[in-house]
Image (tube, rainbow, N blue to C red; front, top):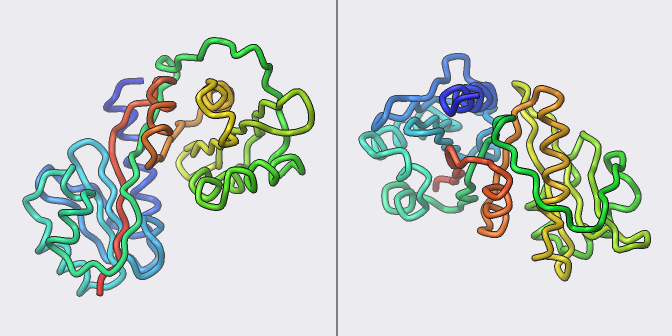
Length: 242
C-alpha cells in the first residue's frame, strides 16, 4: 500500500471520528475547521486538531470556538497546528492534551524483530494476568498504553512464571483501524519485549485486513514503532479554551 493510500485511510478514520457530516481535511495552510459537539477528536467541550500529511482537520464544540480557531490558525503549516507553543500563543488555552504522533503501517512495511529467546503467548482481552502489569507500570504509563481498551487477542511475554512482562494488542476503531496498545513492565524495558509483542499484534491486525495505527507521545514508544516499520504521518492535539 502506498503512503498516499495509507494516509487516505487514516484521514477517512478521523473524518468519521469528527462526527460532523461535512467534516473534511483542509488544504495546506487552510485547515478544515468544523463545529462538532460530539467529536471524538478531543474530550467533550474541547477543541481537537489532527494532521495527516500537510492537511489538518479541527473540531470545536461551538460555532464561536470554531470561528476563533479558524481566524487564529489559518495560514499556518500543518506541523504548527499541533504545536503546543503555537496553540498557547494564538488561542486562550486553559488546558491541553498531547501532542501525540500518529503512525501507520502497511503490510509490506512490517519489520519483525529478532527473536528475544522468550516465546510470546496469546491471551484473551482482559485476562486476569494483565491487571498486575498495569499496576506495576503505574497509572500514567498504563493509561498511556490503553491496555484496558484492547479488543483483540493480547500477545504477552512472561518471566518464566505467571508474571507478564510485556503485552500488546489493539482496539478495533472505525474504518477498519487497529489502534495498537503496548505496555512493558518498567524493569523489563530495553530488552526488545515491546517490539516482540507489538510485532505479533501488528501482524494479527494486518492478517485481518486492518490498518495498524500507533499513537504515541513518549520518545521510547515512537522508537519501537519506527523499528517495526510504522511511518509517522501526522499528529493530534487537544486544547480546552477559556
